[in-house]
Image 1 (cartoon, rainbow, N blue to C red):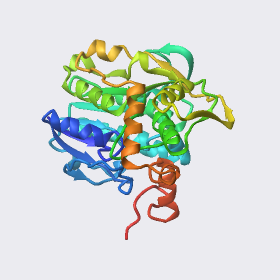
Image 2: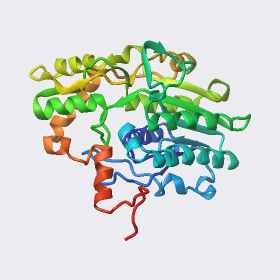
Image 3: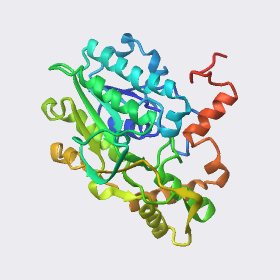
Length: 342
């Protein structure tokens, strides 16, 4: 298939693209490349790229594709909170417009990278795809709105699918430290402390970015009737953890480190446990390979090999909100998060 990957140069996209190529798909990327200065020691696969903001996509950009894998957008809660109006403009409105154009162009498959943050404050009970949305941030609310609006476009010729990813982790050429397991291992490696900013009680499902990519591939290859206008939680039931449990796993990998709570550590209203059985039951091709301990070891080995420093970890390069604020302060981006013309 000829596949367009929006967000191809981001944290997940740079891992997904090589896996698509290995599966013999023809891949084109679409990305404004906000994080071009943030590559972490890993080579990125070169693919044809439409270097464009998702808000500026035109129908002509979409000609000839069989499927769109839509990952582009502001990528987490802090970035979404920076300017909620922009978050809805980019993550919601531009995504729905992209789906509408895809349908008009006759592109039959539209796979949206949603999030388990749509469940938000769901408490300790397991929640599956039929559970109520309860987002607590603009980022989470925008994901809900995209799912609801794009679902209305579904018909016999347009097949949207919504992948609600658990909290991602793992090594990528566009690494992020603003993700819980990546962050805990980086604290441990650079300071000897496994540092918790909450009281450690909130539940999070986590999933490796390679397994997220496997979910995209499984859906891309699936018969329409199995995925048509369907949502799938992406992860494994065994990979729901309280944050303090993740800290203990990091300590198993790095036993010389100590667990430490921030002085103002308190509860986090984002708390959800997610039932992920639907995806592997529906699509046996989806066969996740990672767990938290294996992921923590991968992160530790990589930080050690690269020689990660505390300055790099605490700096803006691998923190999405920090990097965007830096580009804004240096007037490289304008207030609408667009590149300023030189």
